[in-house]
Amino acid sequence: MLMKLPPSQRKRDVHIISNDTLVESPLVVQHIINSLNEISDAAAAFGLPVMTSITRPTLDHTFWVNLIGRGYPSPNRTFRWCTDRMKIQPTSKYIKSKVDEAGQVILLLGVRRSESATRSASVRRYDNGERLNKHNDLVGCMVFRPIVEMSTDEVWDFLSEAPPPWGGSHSKLIKLYRDAGGGECPVVTQKTDAASCGTTSSRFGCWTCTVVEKDRSLEGFVESGFTEFGPLLDFRDWLAEIRSDKERRQARRRDGRVTITDGGTFIPGPFTLSARAEILDRLLILEGEVGEKLISDDEVDLIRRIWAEEISAQTEKKPLRMREIKKG
Image 1 (cartoon, rainbow, N blue to C red):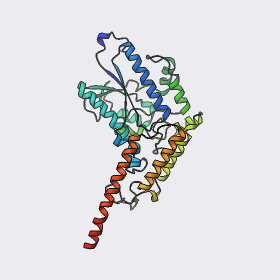
Image 2 (image 1 turned 135 degrees about the vertical axis):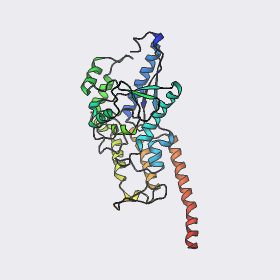
Image 3 (image 1 turned 180 degrees about the vertical axis):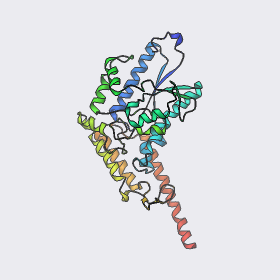
Image 4 (image 1 turned 90 degrees about the horizontal axis):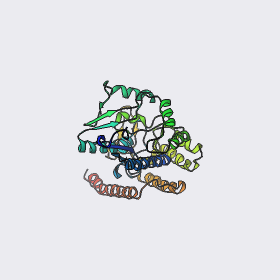
């Protein structure tokens, strides 16, 4: 569409963004990086006002800093702490920055009614009968869903017949999905969209995701010949397994409270420091096995600082408790 317009009418900046949680499936995140680079190069060559960006969580909000540093248990359906920190906040922050610059933005989302019953209900809930809908959470952001009525087959038919305007073909993308037997994990900008990740369907998402019972897309890659990623599956299954190990969990939550439900069920707190150290040791060994950087040096440094602060706080509390006991 932009290439059909004369340069004088290309007045609006177009930002193409994707989210990297920093624990994406390695094959998927590399494809995203390559695709955005190709789009950026073509935009520069054609003189188009197109900019590409990848949003990522802040260091304090990464998966490993929260799980290994603070001891958050691996996510499940009732405690899915990851989506907001790793997907929604980084992308929403980027969009808000563009609203501040331009006054208003239009967000194009590739959501479709036929994705699932949940997605269809979400589309219907925010549909006002107009082409543009106000975003539920982001002020100054209007939402346009250009392919909302298309079926999955129609999307693939188009991609197989129409080459991308930035050059090449969609063959790599098609192969990626074929190898994974996967679906999709789109940009998420509000909590009501969170069901698009961590469902029982086969979707691209974080390789560490313990919300689903099985990571079918990563399993698909392994079955398609990418056997080097087999250890990632084993590690992810281990993370899900130790979540229920009471020996690896503290009795109190990080704020010091003991949690018991109305039904009398005791909810353990974060992973113990020894369990967190065990996870980190295994993760660093896993890096060597798969030949991929899975945790950054900055994350490791912050994790160790969090541990040191926690140990220091616990040490300071012990004399106080002794004094209270004697006084009583």
